[in-house]
Image 1 (cartoon, rainbow, N blue to C red):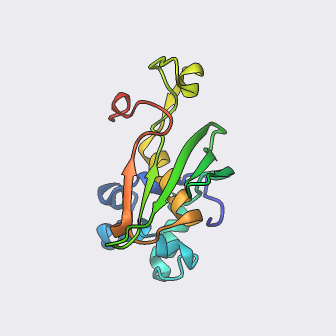
Image 2 (cartoon, rainbow, N blue to C red):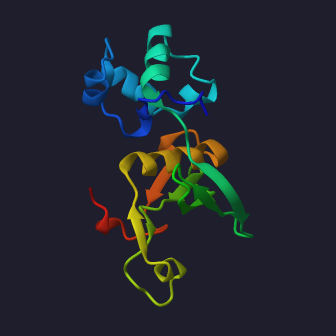
Length: 174
């Protein structure tokens, strides 16, 4: 995690190139967007950014990721994670690596799209808490980055994403 955000900082994980440009990034906002969404950028504490890009990020963007508060590994190799968001709300994600005999190994990450769920399914613990709120796009992306930085993989070519954590994804399409 990077140093604390400024008072006007916005969550970096929800920024798009037009938003970065509107915030005053003077160079190629699409390039900075690509760097922000590359895990390797943050593995080396963003040293790979230019001084100007680093200064812009430090002044305008919040790079804080949610906190993984617990991990429950299973005998099958998956890990269930409880993740605390900035407002203290908690969601769950599951990291499921699998080895394939004929191909490179793949990992599926199961993400949450909501805190709680309004569906009311009787077999589901999440439904018992009801719907607390939808996750914002930056919270979903930050949830993914927290899991990937903790457990991998570092390559998107070996990654599957599913929305089967907390919430009903089609109720949070926005």
